Length: 201
Image (cartoon, rainbow, N blue to C red):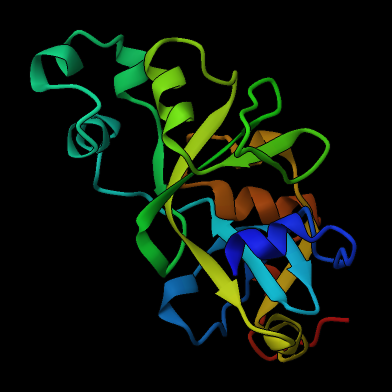
């Protein structure tokens, strides 16, 4: 569903390129205080990535697991490459990796998400990052968040989410702890102002 939804741009949803910000009353523990970047929204459903959840696996771990290099080669990587950010993108297909990145890198498998951001889920971008040929801004995510037809709309109506236009700076901000508050600030809202009972039009 993930790539068919992304590739079908004829039916763009109003949430494409938006942040979803979890309300305090969010019942699904997977999304407590989550900020989700919506990559695709259509009548077929929606998909996106949580951008403020840390992941215990390091980029070096990924390289070794994929057998793209051995331990000695990994040690020789620049610190900036070894520290390449990896986030927990959502509860669906948590063993699958995706790279959200600026549009200065493209491959045959890259899918434009917005005018400035693309998504690539193949090894070529990992190799490019290791070789110093990768995008200027990028984040790797394991897993994604997915919703069936009408599911996300219902959650918004039931006060599960706030939504606002996404910003590239916040998507790629490596300081995860403050992202929830920063996303709310885009709307002029502070966490203290939120109520799990309040409606949202």
